[in-house]
Length: 407
Image (cartoon, rainbow, N blue to C red; front, side, top):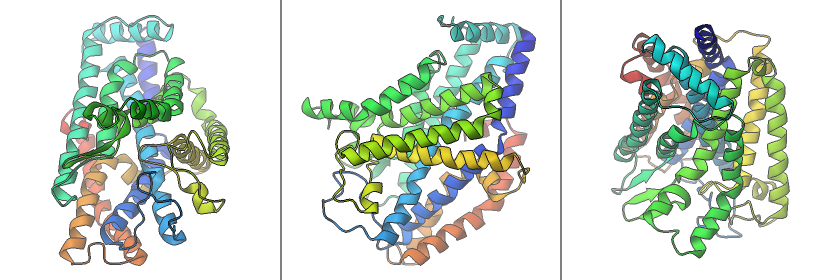
């Protein structure tokens, strides 16, 4: 059993170093910089990604729309890959965590029994993993205060992607115990049923209550805006966890990743096309006004519709497939831009957003310029933070058991 544990740990380490995963994380960091640069500099920025934000028939200028639309890939990918990383981390800790060998073996045996469909027995090792997930989730969610204080004006506090990730992390404490075959089914059920739950909450008159807003519908409560209700984003993280578990437990899955992600991406895009064509359930009330391409792509993010999730995760899967193919023929540069940002995504996120927002204010051009300034600002902040992220990557590698493991 000890050798099996070492094998699981080795598999988890090998999977976590897959270059396409770093490239994908790095790509979404660059796209996120574009979105937040637009938020800071762009006077014509479109923000119409929900039924309650958009008046049917309103114009959607193509250049502005596409600048916003390409960044929709960020949050779903961020959540999905956070789930993948969590699966790697838990597998390593179960197999060879920093604890006595007998505890590690007990936990590993429990994991094997769980995979056979039996309940996992409590253990000291299991509690340590739960504590890590709880603390990391709480820290990530708490960083929304940092973003609100350094980015958002008017005294507002916005629960955005960090709240979505952090709160979803915490709910993974019980959900990580799901059998491997059940976890993706639960994730898909949450995605498919998200709009139904929203409709039920609205019909019951509880959609605006605090608990329902935080978990399901989002909303405005005085100076607090809930933009990323947990359940929808938990589904994406849980889906990533499921794939991460597959990469860890089935070594052959890494060899077929290019094919598998391509097939999954095409299936997701087929779901998007069917539901967007039907223009009913699955669009979270944000329906097409016409057959124009921008109307097909104008899907609801707040809260996420099935069409939004299928489109973005479908595109992510296809991009990952291409990246896996590229990785088969070339070795990733350890200091490549996407690799560095992909290995320090949270650190980059916490710095780039305040830098962009406060630079635009200091220059007196906040929300006063155009798309040129948007892309220039994104390029500048990426170039500025690249060496800092390289330094942080080295620091984190040298302090694996300290506070950097939470960021």
